[in-house]
Length: 350
Ligand code: NCD
Ligand code: ZN
Image (cartoon, rainbow, N blue to C red; front, side):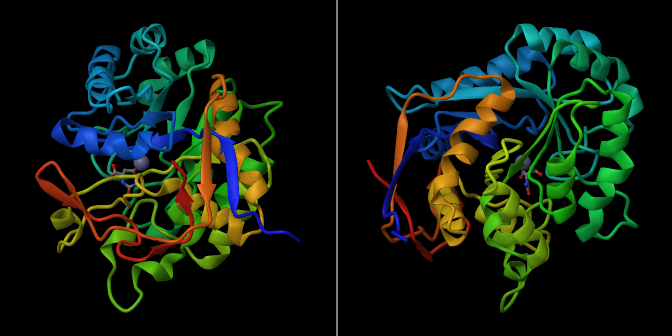
């Protein structure tokens, strides 16, 4: 079998990205926009992006931070809270917001304002069902008595399945899935009775298992939420990602934190992958002999799921080694990328 050394694909989109706010925006947008045409911008700012007005203002700050001549398009998502109403959903729809994000309160970075009880947002969820507004979910339960490695699997039974049954028209994206249970739940979901379901997968969950967090010592730059799982889970994620099933698509969850807040006695959760996301995904697909499936996963299925047109531009990747920088100077802080200082097997051409 011949081995591809260069691949050209339709330009990809990132369906789950954190770019924060303020003077770090230009560098972060530069990294993302050199690979991706569009990205869904996560709303977990402090304070969170909860209304159409806040989203439009945030979107404008991102547009202003783009490199000269860039046509990168931020797609905005609102943060669901206990106080989100049907009116918020209607206004969001009018403003071109593409979804709402469910953060169970306390599940991850800046999730304090998250939902404490889904019954509280019932009118909003009904409106989302009727106007076709998708719900993006951070799929982890937060009870202290549930083991951190089990939080996603328990979420499926305790929250996700009941939610889909209570709102059978609701379109759901199970964000950054990390387990065999989530991969199989999405793969096997019967969408003839319940709403459509999709899932995003990060590069770190395709490339690493939980050993990466502890190899030779604690490695804070491999700590993200949901946390990396056992090898059997990584294998199951690769299996669905390369399967050609359009329910599974790319979402980096690139989540910058400053070096000092990661390398800390209580380090923040999040891996920074925006600079090298596509080479990382290419490596994962290549290792599974499935480079021919990368384009669907990275460039077609997400757009199709959100009902948006596919991109017309192209992205070319080449099998060419490069070193990942040890850190980036971004505004007046340092951000350490995933696999910092080590080799990357693929590079972006141009
Ligand atoms: C994200 C962040 O830092 O905003 N962190 C992470 O570990 N993934 C939040 C999130 O998506 O859970
Ligand atoms: Zn995220």
